[in-house]
Length: 422
Image (cartoon, rainbow, N blue to C red; front, side, top):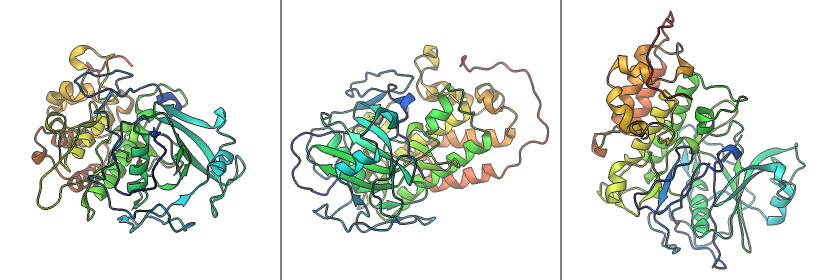
């Protein structure tokens, strides 16, 4: 089981109305590993980018009001039936009628993390810290370190303006969504000014950490593993898009894809999730929030959010998987700073594609599979959202690519690579 946490932008509010909070609010910084904690900064959406390792985020500052726009309806109370057995997600997933979560006391979570000691810290950012904790697998009560079930406990920064909204959104969405490719939220704590969330622990961390970190202890992801991760993430997004109430994830990126011990991908961090259009509408209009390099161009330009705006973000991540390079990286030459803008003209040529494929997976894939993956990427990053495939279609194409056999003989050809030194 698992969770490991990456810096995420500001949240969207949820529709249930718990008792009045004391006035302080905080934001979770879900899904970050310790090494990721300084990589991104939140900035006002004014066209300015921040650069920390190429991971730049933007957001219009949330007003602090909790209007419930675009979120799943919930009871007007957080008094849930507890404790409840943890649901096993079916392959197709399900939306629960009400959150199936445990309410933890602050004292219990303090005990589970050895008093939030530094040696249990998994990661931190502007919105809070994530700790490793231990709970009894059956009762979800605190257990001794090293025994029981490992969990990730996000402790929100009480000084953050937007954290309460993200905390609500996490409970609102993840508390009711059950799918094998979504990270499982086990429970929450709301104790005076303390806001915490408890997740399954993801031992392999984030996709971002595996693709871009230079930690010598992390083995490069193989071609087959990369495809497996892409397919798992696609299944998670397809579930959100094809559910009865379509859900737009709104912040799809490599740092929000977490990996369990077998490299199964799970989507995490639902702080920006929003209900999709209804009543025959093609889109919803909302303030622009997300991450530079991954957010769809129509959303940035107009605030119009389509279900297929998520498909654009998926295409960017697929491009990162193929190239091993970040969506944005200020360390690259200016003409190559934006990965999509730089590589888009190269994806249609088999010869040029070879120059940008990740050298760490050279010889592991057939040229046919790589080219088909590149063509799928091109479809996903189409400027017009109506021209992009659905996530169901993306999933089907990825599964077809996975079935392509590897070429029988590897040629170590000399090539001129467009990739900057890494």
